[in-house]
Length: 445
Image 1 (tube, rainbow, N blue to C red):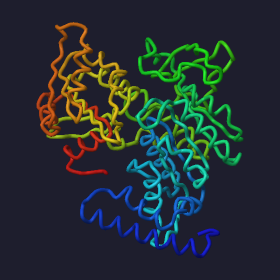
Image 2 (cartoon, rainbow, N blue to C red):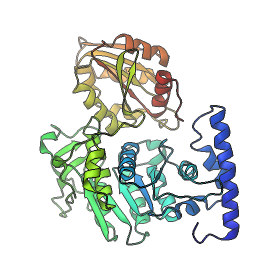
Image 3 (cartoon, one colour):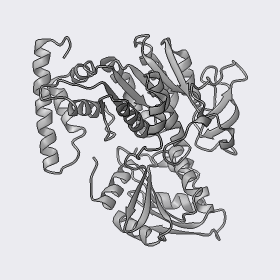
Image 4 (cartoon, one colour):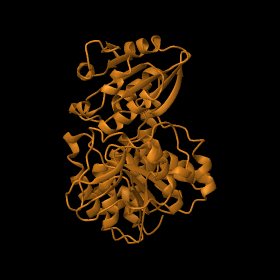
């Protein structure tokens, strides 16, 4: 177990034993997945729990941070490493705050807290990155993107970026950093770091440029001097190919040529997730053949382009929790021929209690294509109002149905979906959990 003091070893063993008992009790009583509570309890017994567990990971901890794509990217990277023959611990339930990270590590330890894994992949909420870097001392940090998400909790992206840069700068020079070249804020962060190995990922596919910069943009100004960036093209939100005409800041060259790589699942945002995981895997020395083989065989994480068969109908769940993510899931829907869509908007703490972000979403594209739009959730009428304001004329060819009861909304949506089409469901985070429980009868909390 490494150089752990005897008293810490005792406290660690006791904390883990208690946590595992709690896990057993919660799951036996079917009260949930026990992905957070065990860590919360164990942490009170041993405050250094995260550090003591992290330092036992043989090849090091991989930290994955960003607003969108954490769960999908971490799941793909986990699969790649396992195909290489490594034993991997992973917070696969998506519990990405400190207690969730500790719970995931304890899940892979024995009763006295001994951890026997090669890697630990931990997806981390963007707001706690500075808090966990010191105790975890990650081998690799994967920085995906920064978008507005739950402004009532986190604030603007520049604030988070500065905190990340300051925290990462304190890590050893041997720490590997993989950053998104197409996100100006993340790219600049990578360029400022003193670490010996900083790699970038991004797209090289001009044919996928958007016709115009969308409404939901956060970082179209130079992070170095504040001047407006010149964009050669954008792929989604503020992500694209850019340069600053004032100070010379420009996009770094990605390690991989995206045009030579397949992608997982649907949606251009999943091409970013694919390239992020592939670039990280290459930096860790994984054989390219193994990486390429994992991509076409990848299975979606719950709610992230997950496809289900319900009563003979095809259902696709596309998590939609902020303006950028929702614009991308809407792009997936509008590129299909399917005409029935269910939108579920909640305002619980995990979703962000401020739902004004829906006014930055390009819902006009959903309304313009017509079909049936069903809305539900705690803030169903807010979403219904947004859709009504998206009409270009009173004669718009779409059918809007408001159904507060989620199960009834799902039943209505299924009834209106022809057998040869797919029902697309666009829920916020807690709504996604409710939708999956209603469809499968299983909780994933």
